[in-house]
Amino acid sequence: YVGTGESIGRRSTYVRNGGSHYTAEEYQAIQKALRQRLGPEYISSRMAGGGQKVCYIEGHRVINLANEMFGYNGWAHSITQQNVVIRLPLPPGCWD
Image (tube, rainbow, N blue to C red; front, side):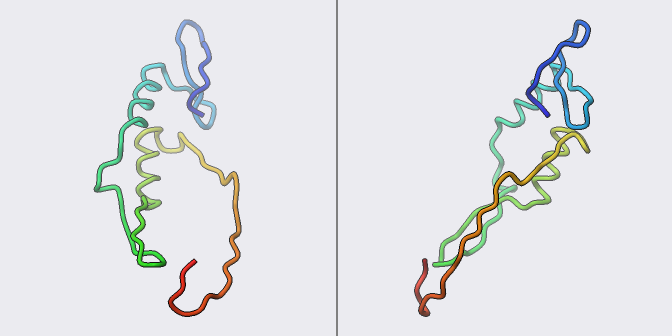
């Protein structure tokens, strides 16, 4: 993963998913890209409960951005926590 620097020969490199290495220059370019804000063209929105508008980024856009930054197969993801929320039925017109 990006972030663990190690020295190989005289070059500083960073380990990527799968065990290959980023050069220091690639690492710095990735860090710069990660600090940038997403433009409005990346943000989608929809109406949620209670008439609220929620904004989100679609999964395919996240995957494309990760592939652009880290290269195909240069990243991984995992679910680290999952919470189950129990919803009780409410009378019509009520929101929790």
